[in-house]
Structures are given as C-alpha cells and as structure tokens.
Length: 401
Image 1 (tube, rainbow, N blue to C red):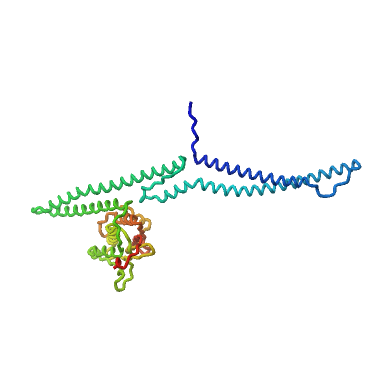
Image 2: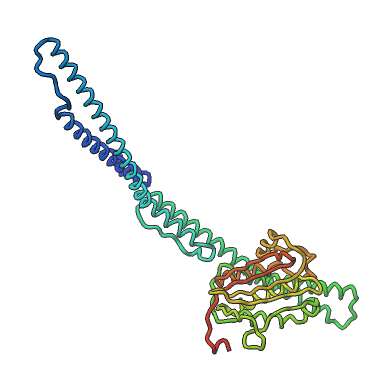
C-alpha cells in the first residue's frame, strides 16, 4: 500500500491559494455591496407610491383604471430599482477592481521578494568575488531550487577560474626553466675561444632576442595570473605622479632613441607647479608595474619624433593618471579591445617589435584589483588617450612631504 505523500509547497500553489482567496474575498465584497444596495431599493419600493390613487372602485370601469394605475406604479418602481441596482453594482465593481489591483500588487511583491533578493545578490557577485553564495533560506520550493542551482553554477565558475589561473601560473613557471637552460647554452656556445662564424653570431643574437621576448611574455602571464581576480595585499600610500615620473626616468634611453617629446607638469611643492600628486593606496609592486606598462605602451606604440603628455589629477574620491599620445586617427571599436590580451592596433603604430600584447590587459587587471578602472579613448585629432582611475586617499603633510 502506497503511503500518502503531502504535496510540495510550490510557488505555483502559493499563487493559486493567494490569488484565489483574494478574488474570493473580492467577490464576497461585491455581493455584499450589491445586496445592501438592493435591500435599500426594496425598502424604497415598499413605501407608498407618489400621486393620488383613485378612490374606491364603485364600478367595473373604475376597478380597471385602478388596476392599470397600480401596474404603471409597479413598473416605475421596478425600473428605478433596477437602475439603482445597476449603479450600485458598477460602483462596487470599480471599488473592488481597484482594491483587487492593490492587494494583488502587495501579495505578488511579497511572494516575489525572494526572487528579487536572488537577483540583487547575483548582480553583486562578479568574477572578483565568486566565493560568495546566495545561501537562500526558506521552504524547498522552486525559488530555493533556483538559488541552489545558481550557487552550484558559481561554485563551478570559481573552480574553473581557479584552475585557469593555476594552469597559467604553473605553465609560465615551468617554462622558465627550459628557457633559462636554452639561454645558458647559447651563452656558452658564444663564449668559446674558437672564432665564431658571423652567421652563427647573427643567429645567436636573434635567438636571444626571441628568448627575451618569450621571457617577457611569461612574466606577463604570471602578472595576469596574480592580479586577475586576486586580492591585493601589502597596501601602502603612493602617488601616481611620483610613479609616473620614476617610470619616465627609467626609460630615458628609449625616449631619446625614439626622439619623443614628453610633457609632465611639475609636482606640488616645486616652483610653477600646477599638478596633483594623485595619492592612492595599493600594492607598490603592482602599481609600479601598472604605471610602467602605461608608459611603455606610450613609448612603444608611438611614431618617431612623436610626443607623450601625462597628467595626474584628483577628482573627489578618484585619483587619475591620463597618458596621451599623438598619431593617426584610430577606430574606437578597435581601441576598446586593447584591454584584452594579445590585442593590437597594428604594426604601423609600433617602431619596435618588443610588444607582447599583454601590457594594457595587465594594466586593466591591476586597476580592477585595486577597485579602479582603465579607460581607453581614441583622440578625435589622432592618437590614444589612456586613463587609469583609482580610489583616492587623503594624506597628511608628513606623508606628502
């Protein structure tokens, strides 16, 4: 004998019960109002009709006249009562219609509140906090099943992102060993006392250049694996203006070789200064790498004899570094893709082939890890505008000094 099983409490059943009860109450209210109006009309119809009835019938003709008069009065009374009942029913229907809409909205909002909470929590969870879960409470119905399914999906996404980062980091780390071995073997071969043919020396220089390029590419992979979706530790207060100045100083030789003109206003505290230090807080190594990549991009992707303009500002709660370069007019759709790995605008903008295609993607990842953003714009008059925005912090006079 099969044991009777209690039906599951589903959202459909809740809607059925709630809306059924609501409309039942509406119908009861409508009938009550209609009956009250009808009773009022009945009481009116029971009162004496207006006019003066004819006297006592003395003849058959008088009796017939009285019957006709009574029928006319009864017909008028029925007409008035029907009109009153129709007006009352229409009024009751309008009132109960409004009440039903209000009650339906309130009840539907209460029933759908768990879905709204799930929607807001899902929007809040992004690639940076995939460890969070909805953890919905309540009966085991469709809403709970939906929340549990989303939690399982977030868990699979978190595992997938973690596996991807581990693979990139492990592959980049493991590839460094054979690269170091190849570079060492190449140096040993070139260091032999016997004369080396010119063709062999040229080939060795080309191989060393390619090995250096692969090494920079692996370093970029490691940096992406460290910053993308990762927490930032060892935060300290830094100035974007000071970091930009240090990056330019470290690349003086490259700037001179490309005959580039650099515009960087003086920092506060110096004569004629009209620049903001743009203080922010973050990991010194990561922020230094971010500024270095922005400056490298401005130097590498430039034309011979071009120019670079840097500016640092603080606008409310945002510290911003803006780097602009000249050149041809660029397509904004292509510029928007530069923050993705291995996206370039073309070799015609580059006077050097040392780019890896990871520079701006690393900048975007580091900025996002610090709660900021990277904005890339094609300048209408030609060239590129790179803006990095980070949360600004207030500093004391001792720190600023």
